[in-house]
Length: 152
Image (tube, rainbow, N blue to C red; front, side, top):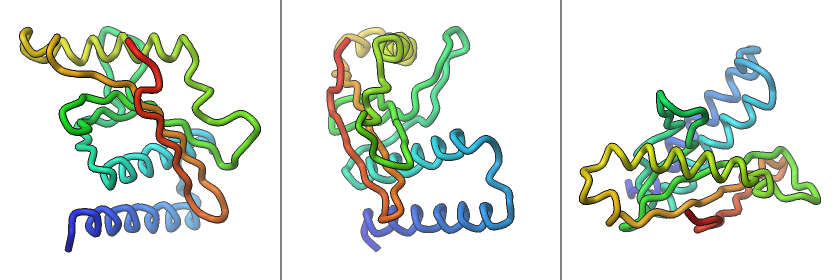
C-alpha cells in the first residue's frame, strides 16, 4: 500500500469510529469542541497527504497560554498550523478567525517551541505560519490551505 493509501485508510478508520461513537451518544463534549477536534484530525490527514511531516498536535508550553494545533515540516520549512473548522461555508471564511491576538499567541508559541532546538539551529530553521480552513459539509469535507498566512 502506498503512503497516501495508508493515510486514507487511517482517516477512514477514525471517521468510522467517530460515527460509531456519535450513534452511541459518546461524542464527548460540547458540539463546537467535537467539531473542532474532528477538523484538526481531518487537517492532519490532509496535510500528510500533501507531504507534510506532522511532528506535534495540540502543542502546549507550560509557561504560555494557548496551543498550536499542528506543527510539521513542509520540506525544509517548519510550519506552525492553525486549524479553523466550520460545518458550513458562511460569508466570512473560517480563516478570518485567526485575528491579530491569535497570530501573536502563535508567534509566542513558535518561539517557545524553537527554544527546544540547539541554539545554532534556532535562527537557521525557516519557519512559516499556515492556516487550514476545514469545512465539514453534507457533500463532503473541503479544505482551504493558506501557506504563509502571516509572518513573524
